Amino acid sequence: MYRLHSVATPNGHKVSIMMAELALKYDLVEYDITKGDQFKPEFLALNPNNKLPVLEDLETGAVVAESGAILVYLAEKHANLLSTEPLQRAKTLQWLMFQMSAVGPLQGQAHHYVRYARVKQDYAQKRYLNETKRQCQVLQTVLQERDYLADEYSIADIACWPWIRALPLIDIHIHTEYPALAAWFDRIAAREAVQAGKDVINGWVYELPPNFFMELDENTWSYSFGEEQYRRRT
Image 1 (cartoon, rainbow, N blue to C red):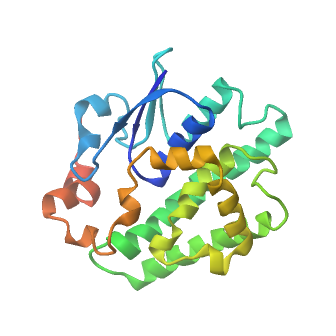
Image 2 (cartoon, rainbow, N blue to C red):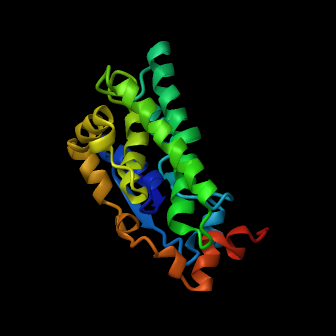
């Protein structure tokens, strides 16, 4: 039995999809990051980095933060979706790390400068949109030759899929621009567990109007991008 602390973001959906793929039972604790739930002392005791998701293993008492680490932990504990054969394992981790080090952080910056930033910066928007498109082309090239990122369905696909799902929010449309990537996306989306894991957490973040964050009151803005986000906590 597990307890999953999460929110409706690509990183949150990675883990709920993994839980569904493994048919695991868990309690879901949803957070409202616009109200500062992630800074409450009881959550900071679980993850001093105040980031979601976080997984509690109620059988062992283990606490695991960082979505990629959670995927590896669950895959290894339940012997599924991460090969034990050295080369296949390395291929899977290669694409997991591509998502964790490139797709998530840099696409996240594209979302920030296109949708969230109150002061628009053309250079920043172009830089991160171009990098996101470059990553899409990398995935397009790879997926022209295979059905899954590491040849077989794995935590690498689970990690990348929610981020590709978010691309239309920054006006990148894979079904018209990256056909092999789009075919992969649809292949993953057709999995029953992916739909179940996607839907278990309210997907409000994908439905926000483009100017939502620019119109936030100062208090709410502060929790996401301002003083409260960066205030020192001891």
